[in-house]
Each structure stands twice: as structure tokens, then as C-alpha cells.
Image 1 (cartoon, rainbow, N blue to C red):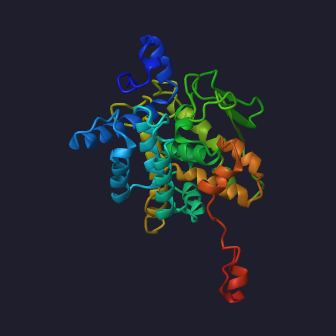
Image 2: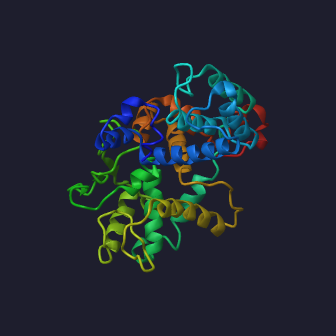
Length: 353
């Protein structure tokens, strides 16, 4: 739990184990795991130089030299900040300040940021339309005759795209009566995460927050629109898994010895990537590199913004506090053609939409 590492704080050492445990849980388990990993690396570095990792001084350059070695090794400035936070959580105060608040460390991080500014992705790693086209064809359709594997990953992908949620939030969805409720008129469905689930952004507005999905109403000749309805896919998936279900968790393993058991978060992420890979292979296109499940948030919200959805609604759906988060880290150019193409290219060279 890191009690010994928190020793430089005399207030914490005098607390009972229960109080210490509560204080340590101020950070999420994933954050504590990251800090533990970074602290172990820093401890090993200090051991090589016969330094005390808890009381080594910034003026002795131990911490700065350690950060410089990480920068020389290709670590990004954002990664260095995680290391600084991990060291600050366990290191004694230096000049009446934390390691992260020390002037030299602050200047070092600013210098690292100028030397290696972040390169935000401005183009999507994969084509959403190409994947959606594949979802309308075999082996995904007809949905009633499709294998459970294809029904599973299609449902997972559509639920990842429609509400633009993190994979952890999708993983926490449940089919229990208190967490899955269909509209009586068949117009949609409301889903709640497992009550024990804690979102990444821990606030009253995000706790036990429902997902509301509306049934797609397709006009005549818009069969493709109907085939991509997440409510339709979810209904088919819940029915297909009813006979094998051994857990209330929404997404289950569809095969192997764990058939019917709760799916892991990592495997759910692989499902989303697998469906993108399948779409590219099936269409004879070269596979894009670096595709991650998390990219669905950038692609779906960028398309929503392009189609005129208000930024406030986009941020509310994706659980972002301000539009700045979307603009800085997630918005990518999904326009086809590029908006400036009509100005920079002759009419004959501009592809039609």
C-alpha cells in the first residue's frame, strides 16, 4: 500500500492503518500502480548511485539527472510529469516544498516541453465509414443468423462509437434489472454501470451516470441506417447470450472454457480493434498502424462536431469538463474532402463528398 514510502509525512505515520488506507485510496488503483512502478525505477536508479531515494536532494542533481536520463531515453514530457508526481508522493520535502513544486524541477519540465513539444494527432488513424460499411455485410449481417462472435464485437463497437465512452465505462455495463431498462414503446434503452464502478473523473455528476440510446428510425431505402442501430444490436446480443450467461456483466466471453463468463477490460478493447482490422482486411486495404480502442472517442466526437452537434453536448456525452479537452487532445480532421480543398485545388481535382 506504500505506507513506508509515505513515511516522510509525520502526520501519516502517526495515523492508524485504517486511516492510512483511506488516505491512500484518494488515488485510483491504476494511479497507485503507476506511481509504484515509477518509484521502483527511481529507487533502482538511486541504489546505483548510493543515494537515499526518500531524502536525496534536488541540489545534488539526483532527481534531475534521473529525469534527464528518461528524457534522453525517449520519454515524453507528459511521462516525465508522471514520474515527478510519483517521486513527490514519497520523497521528503525539499526547501519546504514538494519535489514537483521545486523551482528547478518545474523549469526542467518546461524545458523538456519546449525541446519535445507534443504532437497531437490531427488525422484519424482509421476510416469510420469503411468500418461501418463492413458492419452491414456478412459475417455481421443478417444479425439473426450471425455467430455470437460477430454479434458480440459488432455490439461492442457500436456502443463504443454511439456514446463515446471510455472502455472502462463500457466494461462496467450490466444486464441486471436495475442497470438495463428498455423503453416500453421500443424507442430505446437506458443502461447504468455497475453501482460499484468508479469513473475516471470522480464527481457526483459522473457517478452511476446512465447511457441513453435511441432506436434509429430509418426511412424507406435507408436499410444501412437500420443495420447500424446500436439498440438493435444490443437487443440481439442480450438475447443471444441469455442461454450462456454466467455473469450480470453485459459483455461476456463468447467461446472457450470461459464461455458465458465476464469479459476482461483488455479483451473488450481488443474486440474494438479486431473489428477495425477485419474491416480493412475484408476490403483489401492496408492495415493502419497504431489503432487503439480509445481512438473511437476521438473519431466519433469529431464526426459529431462536423455534423453540427453542440460542443456542450459532445463534452457531456464524453464526460469532459470543458471543450478545451476535446479541442486539444481528441478532435481530428474527419472532413472529406479537406475544407480548404475547394480553395487550394482546381475544381477537377476536388473529390466529391
